[in-house]
Length: 268
Ligand code: PGA
Image (cartoon, rainbow, N blue to C red; front, side, top):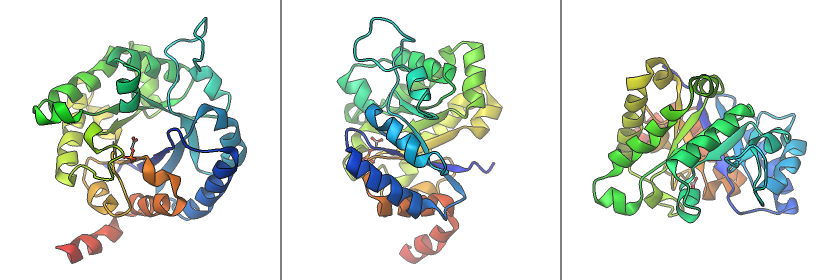
């Protein structure tokens, strides 16, 4: 099964009108020849309108870094999925580990947010990943299992709609995020394969089609070894998404992994 790779930049709490304008124009230019992968950026809410203005006529998708678990109501500071959809967002990161840890987001809350995104026609990028402590205790698989299986708590209609929208899963080992030190490719592959197998137990066809992307220390230097793994379908990129050249170099690998054969053979 050939799944088209997807590379999404997670800008986190970075940017300003002036910086974004420059970076988005650079990205449009840098990515314009890469047709064999999909690209997107998820940026802070206030800049979604700016992204819509700059990226609307380009192949680059844009999205939010979260959406509220509520539709509307007295929830000061919350931003709903239907609000971000009005700014053309087609992606939303949900359940990122920085949200899970700083804002105590449970699996259940994350899955409710997935539902809100889907109801607004937005493709969720549902993040899973174990912490360093869980990793060291050998609990990675049980943590991931619980996070992934939570998705099956979606009602049937939402689940079907999520699949139709191309719901994405991001495996991001928390111990690798922001450290410039990614998981070893074989280690990441094992977890991606595990996630796909978990989904296959419930839904074989979706397991074949779902894009499971890797995040946590993905760089141009390690992109070849990670993105050539058979169950890694792209990347969620933090630090290196703030530099158009580095993002393009990761994108080049995603768009054409054949170039990596030479590199990997030369390294061996
Ligand atoms: P990183 O972040 O690439 O800086 O490790 C990835 C993420 O948090 O999505």
